[in-house]
Amino acid sequence: MPRTLALLASLVFILLAPAVARAEPGDELTVSVLTFGPGDHPFFKFGHNAILVHDDRRHVDRVYNFGTFAFESWTLIPNFLKGKLRYWLSEQSLRGTLALYKRENRTVDEQVLDLSPEQRLEIARALAKQEADPVLRYYKYDYYEDNCSTRVRDAVDTVTRGRLRAASTGPASMTWRDHTRRLTADDYLVGFGLDLAMGDFIDKKTSVWEEMFLPQKLQETLRKATLERPDGTTTPLVKLERRLLSAPGRAEPLSAPPSRVAAMLAIGALLGGALAALGKPAQTSRGARRALGALAATLGLIAGVLGSIFVMFWVATDHRVAYANENLFVCAPLALWLVGLGVKIARGRPSTEERFAKVSAAIAAVAVLGVLVKVVPVFDQSNARALALLVPVWLGLAVGAARLLGRSPLTAASPKPVDDGGEAGKRATPPQGA
Image (cartoon, rainbow, N blue to C red; front, side, top):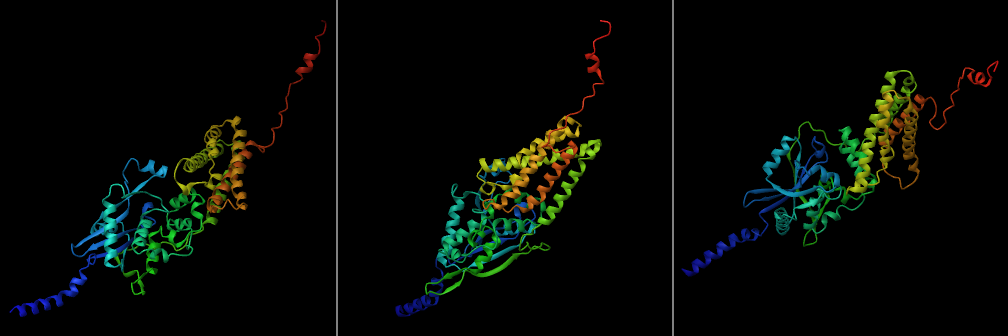
């Protein structure tokens, strides 16, 4: 009897041994990278990503999202303006995540990573610890160098011991500005506004590693990455890829940024031509004078405020992308002077004409200087669109103001002849019979 029991026990052990071997810590986990396609809102133009940890034993899905911020907080705008916007790591269910992105009509792709049980357990524990820590979960957001995608990139690279970085050597396909332009190409105002507000920091040459600030580029690089096994062989990092959610009717982002320099030049020439054409009629026509003054005041307000903001971003915030913005040549704070002068011109004050012409000429000269300095290598910002639009506008305003004045503001006014009616001669003749 004891011998029979021993044989039965041995048989049970042999049958269960493979299952016991498979029940290694972390074997119940599946780790994936989720990539969310672009959306309609300006905040969603660049896509998003997160890490999904599926626990097969507990039947739980945890989506770890590094892109959480206080959208409704009163400190959002001040912190954004100062370059001190804080993001944090949050956790959500896969079901809730998919429901949210379905409402926004955005794609969701899953890339299952072929990690070992030990690696799966390591990244799951690291994410859970960081999400639960009231200090570690927060970080200072930097759109290009420290965002939701770079955090996912770094987490995967850490657990694979640098295999993702090894797959991202070499130069990037585009600069940060090029990517920004192509992904905002469908929203002209947002795209041009971002292009105008950022300096040459985003024009530098980058690597594939840096290019993974975009979720789409991280997704592409994950497909190329490999893992090295203990026996020396390599296998793809991604073992399974599938689309969890489609976005019917949504167009794919452009593969390259549109130039639009010719279009901007045409618009600028049209506006500048209109300003120049108003100068002569404004000498005699009240309507033309009001139009010229109102347009000058509006241009001065917009350009002057933008230029002042650019200076503030440069000297008083942590926004490195806005440092040394060469668009200050075409958005000079000096333009604010045109607000008062334009109003006075519109109200028909001839005494303001000379000052109006001089200020307009000075702004145009600064704008032209922004083109001429391009021969100096240090002035290498990619701002052809801004120059093409605004230089003709400022030149047109300067011509219109000079035509209103009736001469170049750089030449002195001709002295007006004095008609004394012969009174001087009469006073010089003494009265008769004195």
